[in-house]
Image (cartoon, rainbow, N blue to C red; front, side):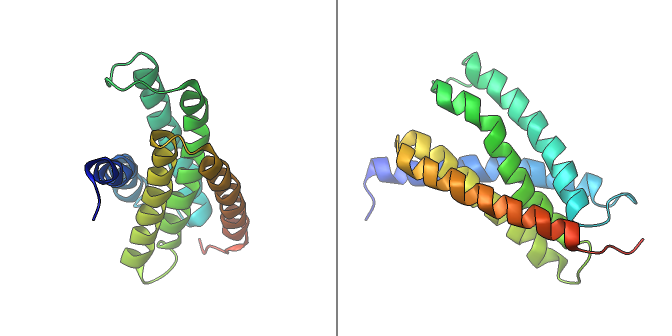
Length: 159
């Protein structure tokens, strides 16, 4: 059984990650993906990257000026935009992949849930002040995003 502090960390893990990534997902999936220029995973990564940097810019300003009522440390402010690039690649690759395959729902949900998990874990590292886990997360997610980006370059998209 979880005590109150563990329960609140658990809720924040899912709610903060999901709310941010779901908003980005809606814009990517229902605004950009239907466009004719959106053809595959690389396009998904590019559009998701732009959406995420817009979100990260606004959120960083809100956090920095304490508009959200949450005090964050300086490391969080400096790494938030970089972390959002990772989340963007995770989300964009799978949402773009669903443009090229038949199982669209599964690919879209894989992108959303993967980005949500990594975002939640990122937030949890700062809530628990577990910087060792943050380093492991950073190294692991950088490796994963490099592999996904390289894979997106290899996928041939029909015009």
